[in-house]
Image (cartoon, rainbow, N blue to C red):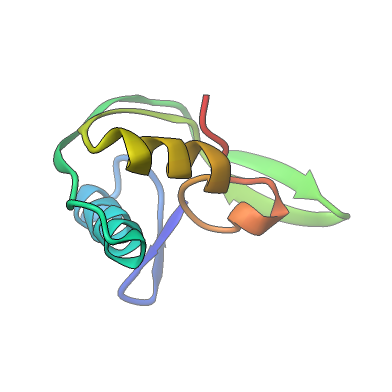
Length: 93
């Protein structure tokens, strides 16, 4: 799940790709790295409910293709991607 213009979006929602591109561009900018290009959603799973620390969270798996600097990819693998990464969401496989 990502936040975009005050809305929580899952893969398949309108503006999901746009929001994800903005999220990635911001992370790249913070790190002083080139903005990634060519984001494509390859597939996504169904909406799922997760429980983390006793609190319900909504999310979905997504598989993307991205042309990005290797340092940004490494940062994403460390930080995660999407909403609630501090709680363990947005993990990268």
